[in-house]
Length: 190
Image 1 (cartoon, rainbow, N blue to C red):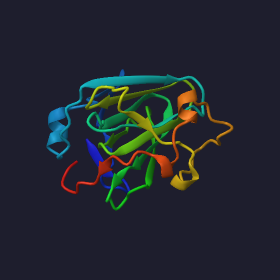
Image 2 (image 1 turned 60 degrees about the horizontal axis):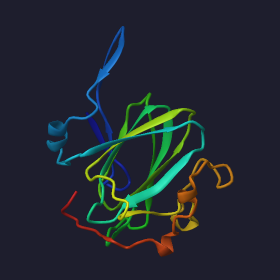
Image 3 (image 1 turned 45 degrees about the vertical axis):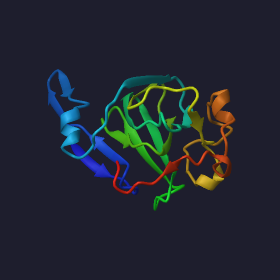
């Protein structure tokens, strides 16, 4: 497995090795023990799957407040996404800054997002299927988010607000200035 840091070293791009033969390929998409050898210790308790039929579908930016804050391992099973994580951890050298990466089924890359980040994505291909593991179950009481197109975040999305396919919920998420400040940066924790 290849592990590559992003501009924010707490966000990592993981690319599991693919074993090709005339039939196609085999990949071990998740291996708890192998990740632990790299200091990535998570107890994933739930797998989520989303299908977005149209290009330009935006989901996010979502997070859960403590005590059910979630770390996520995001991968694309079909299609491609512009994947974004925003650092919500007060005291972090990257506080309020985003990292965007392209994840695709073709590349097989994944994004490891620890707790303390808002996460969202925009589909780049039709019929895109995104899978993500989380280390805490969904909690409606702790569910929160951040408006995906807030100019204060400076995210260069591949769609405009007028072009984006959004849920009613995501259209109404708070801006950066109003978002819940519930995470504190812990330099020693992952």
